[in-house]
Image (cartoon, rainbow, N blue to C red; front, side, top):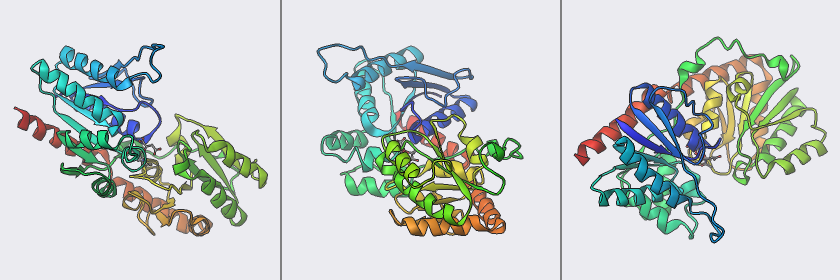
Length: 376
Ligand code: GMT
């Protein structure tokens, strides 16, 4: 089939999931057109069946805010007509589901029916979408999508609680391509980062307030007193400066490596012994799943969809938001002895296998074909 995918092109999980989905569908012979404002960071354009259409918003001095959703819906109308697109899959409700709906209406005028799947990812529901400024548009866009999916059971329940939803929501969890992680991990050269006696702890996020990265540094501060270790902080965002300053103040300048945004996530996770994700909200926690696929256990909060991914006492541990001391104790428990650490590493890998791409892509394909059957 021929489909258009709309997503954010940045390092955020929703864009990563959309890119992995599109890439996997293209490998299975579908024609996939990404429509967004720049090339998605993980998209390899030189691949069979993959196309990218860049949405440009012309700057015009009259506009205080440039109308991206208008430009996106117009671009969708053009791409659908030019390439005979059969269905649209938008990731992240704001403004994508809204722009998608507008494109559907314009195409209807031209005699073209374009069914739309909306995948809810988290903050489009729990943080931003729920704000009164956006709520009516988000409710409308969800209720007017042909198919709605959410990336965890928890996000589905949040959506039903926070919005007046008349549509059925299918839970299709995020996924990972485990075939990429079956190798012997030959590239795991931990000596580039740490001394042999040190454990390596990692955190990856966009360092927004919701990620509570100050908690990451405070947990590490406690762990490091008991277990020689270093912390690798990957990503960038508004909370970074304060957390970095705190780390320096408490004497951890040499122990915390702030590496910024990175395209080498798997290399970093490959030599990591523990992943910390003490988020305030997390609909799924794709970063935790990526860690687990790299045999890295996770200490996280138990918020949102995290307990669905990180099984408490198995692939790591989960705690209440803000329970810094408890998370530090769990981290020490995992890291202290090699034997226990290896038990957690193997269990994390086994748990990640439940989310292998081969279980999830057919679920999306079925939703697409059912939707197209209904449309014809
Ligand atoms: O949370 C982020 O840092 C980015 C955000 C996004 O929209 O890209 O992530 C959300 O979607 C991811 C992919 O489905 C999920 O793994 C994240 O848990 C979710 N973030 C939140 O719910 C805070």
